[in-house]
Image 1 (cartoon, rainbow, N blue to C red):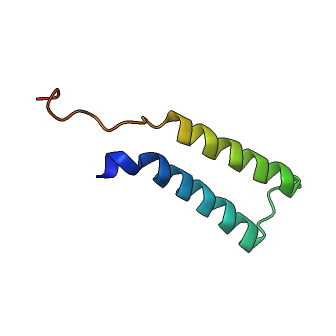
Image 2 (image 1 turned 135 degrees about the horizontal axis):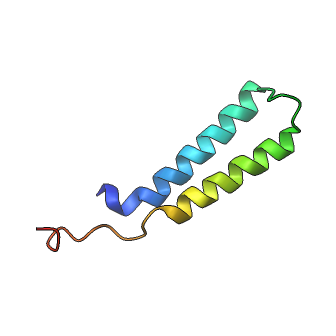
Length: 62
């Protein structure tokens, strides 16, 4: 079951990190908030892309 929703889990975690950043108003060393949000969005996109799309075949691993 978890194999089918890996990309969704990565996207939800990335969105949660972005929302926590916005709601807490963390200041990261004088960096523009838009830049930080952009970096978080790009890292989330890379994370979603990097996760395998299809679950591993359990029969071939035996």
